Length: 234
Ligand SMILES: [Mg+2]
Image (tube, rainbow, N blue to C red; front, side, top):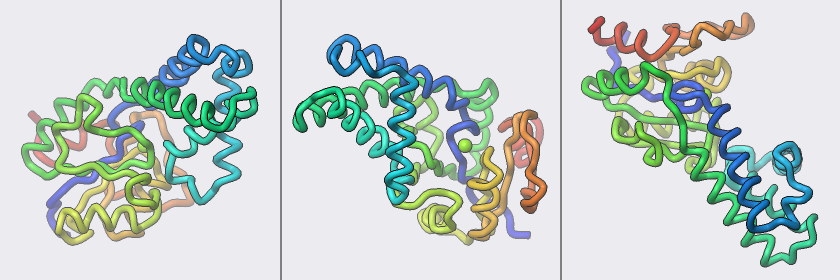
């Protein structure tokens, strides 16, 4: 087996729980609307916002890798439905998205993550690969990574092999020398396996492996387990 030369890490639900960050960001967006666009806010609860976003995602499957576009387009359509003209709707969507996006980066990493990344980054180049739209450098963990890749930037989302191969290419190593680390059995583990990477599944003691999929090379409850395995316990 080829030795690990670099690590590729998923972000959402691997380094931090994404649910609380999204809920906080949606609340911030609704608050912003209530303050500056009350006529739009009147028909715009968090539930409405989610429903619009879902509808736009279903109508535009080709944009599924671009969560920023989907959310901004949903906001624009909501503004038009509330009676805004095209230019005002564009402005409202851009401004509201900025508020959402700033709050979306107020992520709280899982307790062990910063220390584990510090240990791992001292031994391996770390790359990030996310289907989400968080910008790693806007979070407290940006400094540990050599580079960050997103589905939006690549134009292709995990589990597509092309997403993983882009990271492997940037690292300048063979796919088997890259260990991909993530929480999602399909998007992370299965996708990385298809691209020839080795895999580590982070399950947080809460997920069960779907029986239909081949298992990951490694399974850890958290990133501390991964660091101990690769580097030996502290
Ligand atoms: Mg994830």
